[in-house]
Length: 489
Image (cartoon, rainbow, N blue to C red):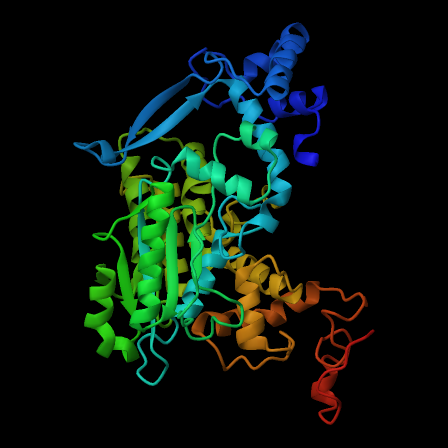
C-alpha cells in the first residue's frame, strides 16, 4: 500500500527543504534554516531519527514537545476563549507530519465529500460561497417552495475531538493499522441518516445537504419538522461520538419567506436562534438577491481599519506601496474571488489605496501619476499594482472555466450543471435565467472566448452545435433547425 511504503531519504530531505526558513521554531530553538544550512553535517543523523519513527511508530517526547502560544483575538482579552492557540512545533515533528500529509493528500478528494472544501487540494473556498449564494437566491420570494438552512456554530471544534473517534473514523475508511498509528490528527465530516428527510429545493439531484469549510457548517433541507429533527438528532449523535458541540446560542435557522408559517415549530425542534439574510459566512455576506455597495461596507471598513492601524508607523513611499500590494490587495482578492464587485466599490477601494500611497495618513500630498499607469507592470513603467477591475474579471472567469471543463471535483460546478445548464452548453444557455451571480458570470463569456482553443476529444464535454469552435460562432444560432445536441464521438 502506497501510504505505508518505506519512507526514503530523498523524501525526508525534500520535506526539510520545503519548510520556509522564517517559520517559528519549537522548544529546541532550531529553525528549518538551521537544518538546511547544516545539512552536510547533520543530515544523515536527522534522517536516521525520522526513519526510526516510521519503522517503530514511536516518537521521543523531546521531538513532539510543543510551545503553546496564545494570540489575543480581541484588544483586551478576559476569557480563555478570547485567545487563539498557536502551536510552535520542533522541525523534526513538522517533517514527520508533512510526510504523512503528502501521502494522504492524493486520497483526500476520494475520501471527502465535494461539499467540503477545506484542506483538499484543487478545491476552493470560493465554491462554497458561490454555491451558498445560489441556494439562498430567492429566499425573500413568497411563491417558491418552503426552504430553510441551518448555520451551525461548532464550539472549539479542534480542541475537543476525541482521539477514539478519529481512530474509529480512520478504520472505517479502511486505513491500515500502521498508517493510523502515524496519524496525529484527521479532519472528517458527520454523516446523517436520510430516512424521512426532505432535501432543500433543487438540492436532491446532487444529494446536497451540507456545505462545510473547516468548522463553518451550513445545512440545507425542506422547511419541515421531520427534516429539521433529523439534523438535530445527527448533531447530537455527532457530539456523543466526537466531543464536538454545536453552540445553540450562535447557531441560526434561516427561513425562506414561504416557510414563515412553520417558524415556531422549526425553532422549537432545533432550539437555535433565528437568523436573517444577509448573514456572514466565511467572512462574506450571503444574500437573497444582488450585491449592493452597502453590502460591501465590511470590505471598505476593513481597509480603513488596516490603514488607520499604520498611523503610528513612519512609512516611506516604497513601504506604503508594499503594504498595498501585500495586505490591502489580499483583502480585495478574497471578495473578488466570490463576488462580481460593483463598480462603485472598486472605485472606493482604489480611492483609498491611491490616497494612502501618495499621502499616507496625512492630508499632505497629491497624486503625481495616473492610477491606471500605476497599475501597469513594472517592466512597462508602472508599479505593479494589480488593476482591480481586470483582477475581478480574471477571478470570476476562472469559475466559468471550471464549468467549461466540467470540473466534477467542484460542488458548485455540479450544481450549475444540474440546475442551470441541464445538458446545455455554457456558451448558449440563456443569461436571463438563474440567480444574479450566475447572470453576472455569464456576461464574461465574450471576454473569455478569445483566449480559448478547442480540441476535439471523445465528445463527453464538447458539443459541435453549441460550443463556439468555428469562426462562424455557435452553429446552433446560425442553423436553428439543426439537432439540439450532437456530440463528436
